[in-house]
Image (cartoon, rainbow, N blue to C red):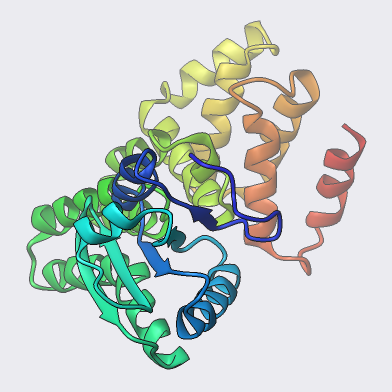
Length: 290
């Protein structure tokens, strides 16, 4: 990708014929790309550019602004169909989807951008919920999956999918959805909490019988896999005291076990209990000390 036109313009780039395919067409597969065609001698196009730059900074990356100097890139402007200035084109999914001729009001530019920044994810969620309410659960999940592929940086879609699958009694499938997300998305607070909670549900379903767990720990108290199984089983049974103690013991013995499940589990449970619960303070101090 080309460098921004100025350090403060983090989401504004200058295009040439050489980089137009990558900068505009390829990037539009990830999100909206608004192309501003301008010339240094055209006052209205300079005003349009200033306004679009301000909007690009305000929207913080929800769309990419690409500028084309038509004096330097005459053939590119002609190829895209620019015949007068100011002019802008919006690209999405690798193709031109809207075009605007002449200077517009700020509200008009915002409406143009909003139609493509938020519409897809919002439509996907609304459609999925409507299908779910009609009893078409598999179709709702399919719509969310397709939306998540089209908008891979939007955490709302896999989060809603996981919640609906959990509601349908499919916590294992819900866990798999969240577990397959890139690390950056799994670290989103809501996803991380649900991922941890679902992990315990899956662990509880796969756990050995209670007698087997107790016998195993009696023979070897260091069996963290069995402690985790006991924590999961007691958590599902709403025995928070036992679950907290087992997770704390896992964290004390090996903070790295199962990607820090001791700490992650404690944090999730303490958030669920709330700051007024008397059990929260001692376990928060444990986390702070270790």
